Image 1 (cartoon, rainbow, N blue to C red):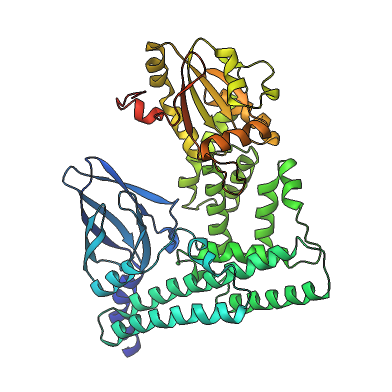
Image 2: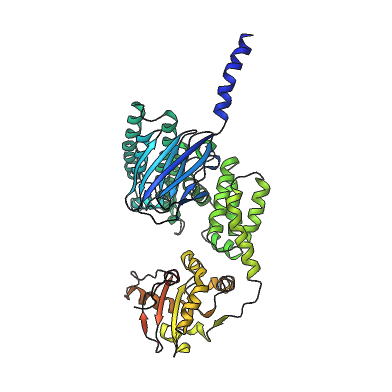
Length: 494
């Protein structure tokens, strides 16, 4: 009887530990415009990825509220409005309040583990590890890289331990912070080693390079032995995806038959994503594979390159994981791909391709057929997200340009192998006006114009780029206003 009675007493406590509890985050952001947006990652299965995020509307007073049901401590990331990415470590059933400034960032975090939260807000928290790991790229000594990173990690861990020893953060908070920051430093160390290993594949092999390759592989193996990528308890770290992406690349490169040209070959065959996810399946399993695949599909679809194979891969994902909560976030981007291929199958006659555009080497040559008319030039590419984002204003832009009888000229700086995608994008985005697919010479001359230099090492071009031309072919505005600015009422020309 005593055993039964004891089990009865503790059963509610056990069930309470398994049940989800509502966690509430409120906040105030000073210096923001009315109806601004803030994005907070949805902790699906405890993960924290920017793509799987909820959208919060900040009210006219700068206030916002976010609620989530948690079973265990999680990490979420905040972005938008404020200039940097902030991470919050949340516990079930707790309430938190954030005081932020659009320019100055996080000011105060009130609630459970306040001091730990503020410590985390002060730490580097890049979107991608490359942002901080690039500083080690020129250091060829693996021991030196490890010592430098270990020093940073030890200094930081001393701060966390001090808070834990003083009981100013909970054990759960301390454990989660350790997981998060351990992955941060492990991924930081893996990146330069991976890049060095990758560089060796571009050279003919000799005994010296083979020895170096062996050393790099052993070094990477030692890093990944610390935190096995298939340990499902570790996917809670926001740096887990970078860490595991490097892992899969290192496993690929370390194979004796690895070929640098594989990516190009599979891309030309239209099965690059299929191949890359197939590689992931060799090394990941369970929740780790589900999360990695979901994030990969989201990232690939979000790029809006509209590869048809992603539709098939997503259908397979839904079969493999019929109850996956990630599906809800991926589906809208796959739907865009489906609509894209429906749209490009329809005729579109409002696009005019300038005669012999392939032989045009300068902006002056490109403008000759339009002499006598003002021209608004849009320099873009199919891989440029901001370029394509501006196209949503084309309806209003058309009315603005028609008032002054201005023609629209699109110049794509896509590579030749993107020619069909260029044609398809014109159809999908309904780009009325004149079109040129710039060859390498015209693209180079545009870079010279943009960069104001003949030094090839200093040449660059930032797109989207808009140029306003007068009736004689002269440049009126070398950096004209973007469509998004013009529809807000800004003047086309000063």
